[in-house]
Length: 363
Image: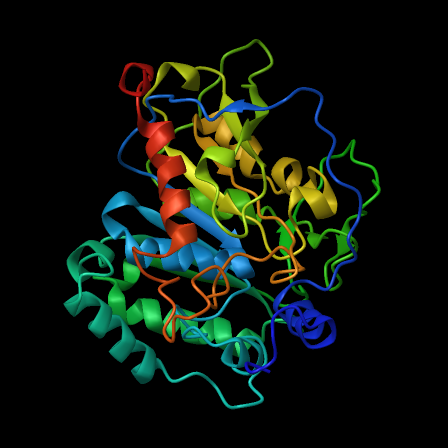
């Protein structure tokens, strides 16, 4: 598989069908106006978190390990251990989703982590040990084996200062995706909700579980809800922004950011939310950025949610995040995708920098 050129359609389509969520390409999300630049909102420099599902879960862990001093919390749904693929597409397919070649070795991955530490390619072990982590996996997941989620939990148990910082959640009847509790007024759309075991058109799973709320409550145990109107609700705005200034291989032109009422004045923390393969806006419209439950929690707790977006390409037809090295230079024998030098990691951190900057700093 690795010797085949990335433009070869059948092997790569098969690999990324497995790495991704196996969804058909659907219509591109509609935008009314040309997106503006990502705004400098003076967001809080502390208490940022990063969460993700599937390939977004792998990328979320890469971000937290590379820059632990920039985050207070990590949430991972339906993914395996950090750096599982080790820059190999073959390992990504055969050890990090299914275990046809056996389970990944945590000892081998720990050696990789220690080597990165010595080279200062990731953040300090002390900073990493202070994070709070929430890890979820569906027991009926047929895309990423639940045993890989167990290995991720074991990995974080080794890294965190206390077991009190880790919550491991499992859903007995859930498959691969992001479980949600649908609002009463929801109706099936062009991408349809998946039932709890099957992904439907979006892999937003109708499991009657508010995983987003459970996860963010864990990551922010001392945060209180805010209300601003007579109905006891707080609103917000989901806006598009131009990703082209952060352009790296695999990024779409447009991203999304949810800004609760009151957060345009500064001091609100940020959550980076990373979709899975074939869950980007090009594939499922705004289903992921509107209906995971993240915005509802964010609106009542004054939390900005950043939704960067990937694009599909010949090298990455399912629109995955780079957790096996496709976005790095083709000549690199050991891609740096899971380090501070990773191109996608750098671009995502630049987006966080922008949100945490003040307007005066960007003039």
